[in-house]
Image (cartoon, rainbow, N blue to C red; front, top):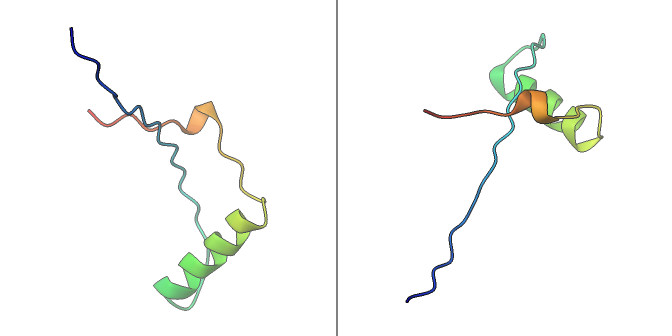
Length: 50
């Protein structure tokens, strides 16, 4: 019998709505918020791709 390694990946996803002057600014704002632990993702944010 062979041995196999199988990777299991879970993906969490959330949508944040922000007001900004550009897409780049909006991304930077949300990224900063995430990096400052102001955004917490949990099992409610689980994304299941079909």
